[in-house]
Image (cartoon, rainbow, N blue to C red; front, top):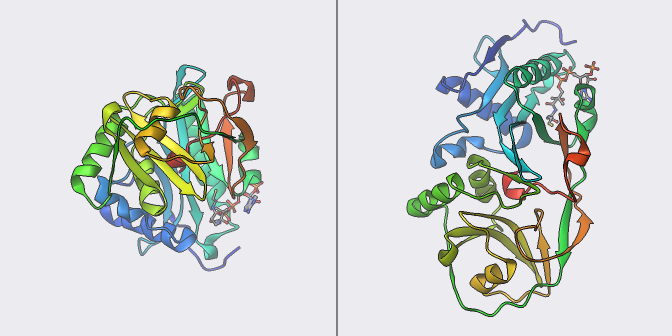
Length: 295
Ligand SMILES: CC(C)(COP(=O)(O)OP(=O)(O)OC[C@H]1O[C@@H](n2cnc3c(N)ncnc32)[C@H](O)[C@@H]1OP(=O)(O)O)[C@@H](O)C(=O)NCCC(=O)NCCS
């Protein structure tokens, strides 16, 4: 217990208050060293966000946990899913049950809203197990590239360019899920934020297909992170447009729409994907959440 701290005020759905939003930006900056305030360059935070937070008498955000709507495609079916993110408590306020209270409120809210699936990414899975979350192992697909003869081109996009941001937003809004097995149906804010935070991500507009490829090159390996567009071209056409001839391909989402087979390899990162509400066998084969949709 921390003596001498008055119980902070609880607030829900507070993003309409610019001071409270800035206080959350500060909490996440201090906790995770990331500046989510940058989202204002791309149109602001996800409008579906439902933040649950505690604020002290000075307006400092001392604890937060947010839910947001993240519909996903699972096995060819559209599933109403909620993502949970931005979970943090300032050090002097920890161990007092603030986070337990916020988790309970957020999960009760998502149940009342009728979300069928809950999703979160965490380095502390034990924290969420009591609430019915369990780890869903993730697999990327690796293998040899298909033969790709150059016949079309791509244009590199820049997040410094307003017209390119507008194009990305249009493609993200109208995208076809990158996989029938497991993919986000629509989620714009995290794609843009993840592109911004990871300077190695290349965004190329495959003009013939009106789709954008998010990818990385690492030695002789091309890592395909996501495709956002009305159609998902086969991998051979994506590589042709990107004009790359890698030794090895890594696809970071189920490749069922790419006309290409790879070998599943466990994807290990510092965080685990956890789900609540659907059984693991709801997923027909290995899954991975595109790194562009990570939250
Ligand atoms: C993790 C964190 C949010 C916990 O906040 P808190 O207010 O101290 O948590 P609470 O006091 O409400 O504890 C809630 C429960 O979580 C448990 N818990 C706390 N920290 C935990 C941890 N690191 N791992 C597993 N369980 C943990 C507590 O034992 C408690 O369990 P109980 O309900 O069975 O008693 C806080 O330590 C923090 O901000 N850490 C840094 C950022 C972070 O890791 N955020 C989570 C990202 S997914």
